[in-house]
Length: 301
Image 1 (cartoon, one colour):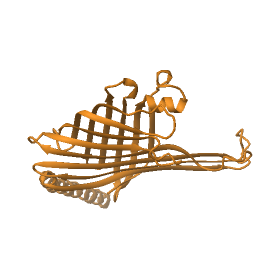
Image 2 (cartoon, helix red, strand yellow):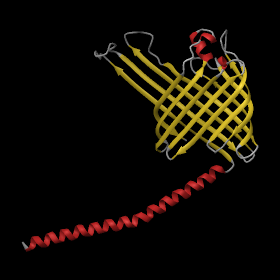
Image 3 (cartoon, helix red, strand yellow):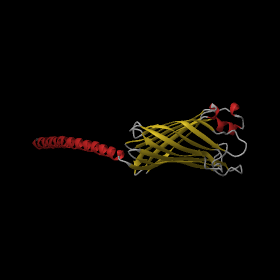
C-alpha cells in the first residue's frame, strides 16, 4: 500500500511538472507571436511603399477547369455509350507603367471553353464544341492633373478567337476624357467622346456609332486571394440599341506555390449580338442577359 501511494505521488508530481512546463512555454510563446505580428505589419507597410514607387507592374493569373467522363454499356442511362467533357481556360494579364506625371495601363483577358457530348450511337458529334470565347485587350494612357485625376485616352478591342470568327464581329473603342484613380487598386475611366467601331462581314445588324465610354477596373490581393473586377460600358448617342456592357469578375485563391482554386463569372448585354444570333432586326431582338462562369484550378504569376 505504501508503494502504491508513492507511485501515485510520483505520477501526480509528473503531471504537475508537465503542466507547469506547458504554461511556461505558452508564456514564452506569447511575446514571440506579438513580434511576428509586428514584423508582418512592417513587411506590409514596406510592400505598400514598394508598390507606390514609379515603374512597371506586371502580373497574370487565371483558372483552368476540366471534367471528362465516359460510359460504356451503362444501361441506367438513355444513352448507355457516351463520352462527355468540359474544358475551360481563363487568363488575366496586365503590364502597367506608373510614373509621377503619367500612367500607361495595359491589360488582356482570354476566356475559352469547350464542351463535348459524344453519343457513340450517333455519328458526327465526336468533337468538342465552343462554349465560351472572349478575347479583350485594352490600353489606357493618362496625363496626371493631380494625384487622383488625369486627362486620358483609351483603346479597347474585343472579339472572339475560335471557329473562324476573329474580328467578325470585332469591337474597337477609341476615346478621350478623364480618369479617376482614388486608390492604386481602382481605376475609373469616363470618356464622353468615344467612337465604337464594329467590324463584321456581309449584311449584318452591326453598326458603329459615337457615344460615351465608362470603365471601372478593380484589382487587389487579400492575403492569398487575388481579385479582379472589370466593368466596361458603351452608351451610344445614336440609339440605345447600339449600346452594350460587359462585367467580368475573377477570383483566385493561392494554396501552394501559385496554384490554388479559381472562380470566374461574367455578365453581358448586347442587343446587336442578340439580333445577329436570332437573325432578326434590332427592334425585334430578345436581348436577354448573357452570362458564363468557370470554377477550377487557378495559377498566378
